[in-house]
Image 1 (cartoon, rainbow, N blue to C red):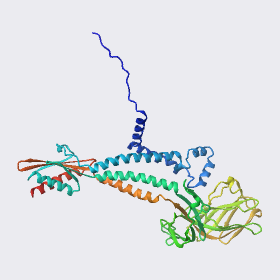
Image 2: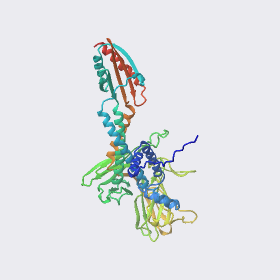
Image 3: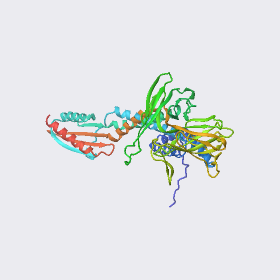
Image 4: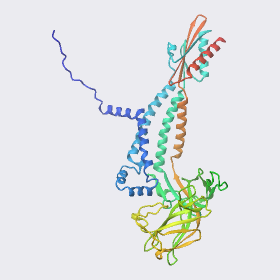
Length: 522
């Protein structure tokens, strides 16, 4: 028997075309899987921002990191490791997530709006197959039982619809999907708020000793990080004078574990607003100063020894309160005095300020209490170029890469100065004198302008409310089917839930019991 073979035919596959590929790409971008993947990428992309120093936060530390890592630093800089949150790749993830969320929200909102306006679906014929079921009988008329079923379900805040004489459908829990949409919409507005704060906001830090002041101008701040669209000349020029910086430490219980612990920090300030209005206020932790266009936070405090440096002819080369940065709970502080006016060679000092000085045989100079019970200043001297290559420096450190340590008069060891308030010391090689005149406190302020903070706050609250609604509200459908059998009406109640709902069977039984009980009195 001969076999017949079918002629081979060329398979024609459908072609998507440009529109088809665009539709396919849009569906992939707006899928929940893609949104979750972008959230994961956003979290991973933020990791370098917490590992490497960021220019927007601390330019001096960033430059110092690059100087220490001459090989890897430039490559990381090209990849945006030091400007993570404004880098093109982080912005791309940010914008794709934004578009993905909008693509998820819009069609779901249309579907939800349509569901809110539609009636609950017709009751199935076999309610016993549903996940929750209860039945019973009552001697009454079918129309009266249907009215009773409608009343019972509406009392429980169900949306009720009767599709025929023998069935009643009810549904509730639309707030679950509403909360879900509110949550995702709030995420979008949260992203917008953060973007507004980044683009039009700015932040700055300044250290102000007691008795000193600062004006809100770019040149007065120690660090200033503006957003891309910030006009630096448009800053509101308010002024803040630190009248007194106070700190309260526990000194009443020497044997207690809380001995030396801070109780309160407070900066008493005189404020002059841009329009000339003046007032006094106090700035505390979690109690910032609200200004027109900026908020002033108290983020740090410490001691500022008053140091005077004179040349050999008695001319003042440096004088003022110099902030030192605390290193431990007893305010053992490090700092630097930079004498840029010295000639022909610049010089500076690095050292320790000890509020309550003590020479430990093993640890060396330490402070045993954070308040100024017995202050002392220990310093070493360096000569050379203070600001090599013009790189910015922290006010608390001295870059000694281009400087040399100064030896003592005998030339046997590095020069070490130990000064208490009111004391002075001669500097070697006829460089003059240095004196420790007293101690002031300083306040470390962080000034922020964030035009998107209101939108961000309300978006976060709305997201929290939507999430709570999504997790707590149950989407339920309850169906009641009635059959007249002589003088008896058979009542069949079934329920189903969109999610796991352990309480649904009990609710169905309660509706059956309440319905049968009401129907008997009709």
